[in-house]
Length: 167
Image (cartoon, rainbow, N blue to C red; front, side, top):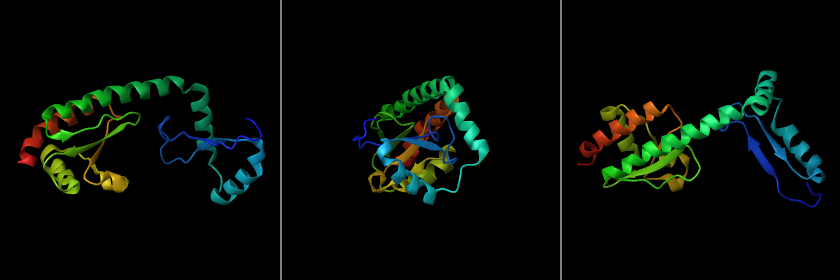
């Protein structure tokens, strides 16, 4: 990197290599920022356990096939979830790069109430979007990075339950 480059490239193992919660990542920055970053990091972390460091090394050295598999699974799940739009009871903007969708059930007020109804009537758990920030209010969050047969079954159950929930 150029000494004058003020761009920080920050990456994590959490999503790409399914190490959510392990708090392992890296920063690429201009060497001129080394002392600043070192001071920031030393007061924000207390050291990463060795097994997590080794998992990170394994991911970088051997994880490309896992990463490709994750991407393929996310694409397949996204396509399955898009079938909910065919019910005409769901507003479902196509996600552009995540492994979850935010959907809004037409004619309903409370996403939290709908989430509880879907648990009761479809045995499917979705998170109210407000848990992810104000912009998520009124939406439900559906994670589709699962086995395609699980997502397919969840979408089928949701689509079946929606007419009862929205009437």
